[in-house]
Amino acid sequence: MNDRVLDQIRSNNHRAISRLITQIENGTEVLDSDFSELFQYSLRALRIGITGPPGAGKSTLINCLVQHIVNRNLSVGVVAVDPTSPFTGGALLGDRVRMNRYSGNPDVFIRSMGSQGDLGGLAKKAQDVGDVLAASQKDIILFETVGVGQGEHDIIKAVDFTIVVLVPESGDEIQLMKAGLIELADAFIVNKADRDGADRLIQGLEHILKNYSQHPDHIPKVYRTVANRDEGVAEALNGIMESIENEQTTGALDQRRIRRHRQRVSTLIREYLLKSFWSDYRESHLIEETRTIESVRRSPYEIAQQLIKSADYE
Amino acid sequence: MNDRVLDQIRSNNHRAISRLITQIENGTEVLDSDFSELFQYSLRALRIGITGPPGAGKSTLINCLVQHIVNRNLSVGVVAVDPTSPFTGGALLGDRVRMNRYSGNPDVFIRSMGSQGDLGGLAKKAQDVGDVLAASQKDIILFETVGVGQGEHDIIKAVDFTIVVLVPESGDEIQLMKAGLIELADAFIVNKADRDGADRLIQGLEHILKNYSQHPDHIPKVYRTVANRDEGVAEALNGIMESIENEQTTGALDQRRIRRHRQRVSTLIREYLLKSFWSDYRESHLIEETRTIESVRRSPYEIAQQLIKSADYE
Image: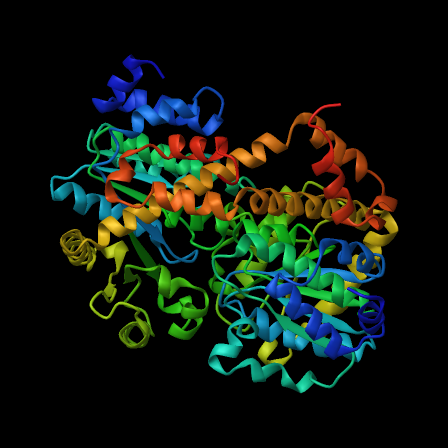
């Protein structure tokens, strides 16, 4: 990336941002060293992850949160990496239009990323996009994910604060605990809270958080919203911003930033290892070794060892 | 693994199977070469993946499927790698007891595996466990997963036939398409089909499958069940077994077996690369480089490069 592009990003030129993000997605024209430079300017933004099961209404909620963030005179970037998000699938199905109300607004930049089966590379790309938006001086970067699985875990582990969005139908607190959603969250939002079962879920969550939290002075709060009627969203945002300020004072936020930095390094190394290994030669070698139905009789361990021992060309 | 253990596995000694699976989970005492040997005896079993969002009632459905498989005079192994499954979390919360009705039955072996944050290693371990159960001469191996994310994708890509379980609340067919669940499925089961919206979901699914399937002569079927009342489950199993027989005839099953074999090799290689890289030295090096809040000012790309260039000891 030349200095001109970097200047454009830093001065919040949305067209330049959009172009750079497309390059990141295509994965061809951007070098890792470019990001070392950009990274210096991306440290100020607050990164918030928003995750939860499909159908929890995350996109509607994020739409609403964006408006309230703007109302607070803050700027915001959204990176939607949830394959179920209408932001992501929008191009295919025509509902990308939903977010158009913000196009032309310099304080809001929304970008969806999604490529099924490429969840590995997706975490790295999503973080790079987050850096670009942060370098454009957005105050807050929101990352939307579905929150199950390695790729999304990589993203959620690399934010400053994680909001888990649930609905009464998401299951009871025991199921949520098993799903690992309890330990993931710095705050909960129970959306569609006008439905049956919302009170029970909120009470169950508060009970389990109070009794099982590892840090008794740092218990995640539970907020209730009806996002499609904009009920409770401003209050949830207020509470969350207050929690984050409080964590800034106690140093908890710094600890999390260190962890997320470490996580990003690990993700980069994994990507690098896989990319270095899978040369064209090794890829065609694998296909060659597994071409026929007879080949499935050979143990995958043997084939893996053979590929590992092979040079990356021959 | 010595010959005695291998013989015990092959003669369906459930205690020996259980011990070996525990060793696989602990990841210490079993060598990859052991599996090359075991693998030879694990080729006959049919591997079926059962996936779907949390709350779709997969576990209840699997309980029910197991009974109908036994009724058909077939033997079955279940590998539950869904962290939301009661099989998995059971030890913690006391509901592992649910499956006890089959203990002592030589034709049924159920094993839950779950370790949050270890989804990478989990795919390999789940496949190894599947091999052990297959080598014990079980006819069918069921793999239960939540079906979002890298680790679970690795498992689902390595089965012969994938069933996606949905409920009316899982979202409409458009959302499911975006979530990548449509292309994953070889058959659908709409469970809790006595609830509102089931008919609409089934019609929507059938419509999208008919119009968007890449193989018009191989369109996934949609079954409806109410698993907790055992309604429709026997019919679904019949239909699915028929589809599989049909695929055996057309060669489609062989093609999928080749793909799953290839996928297993890739997974093994990824595990190997990560394990080789993260020596104790490199791990402590990473922690050292990211100890203070000032360290987050350094680009993760720089730190990653430094670690990659470092020897694995010093």
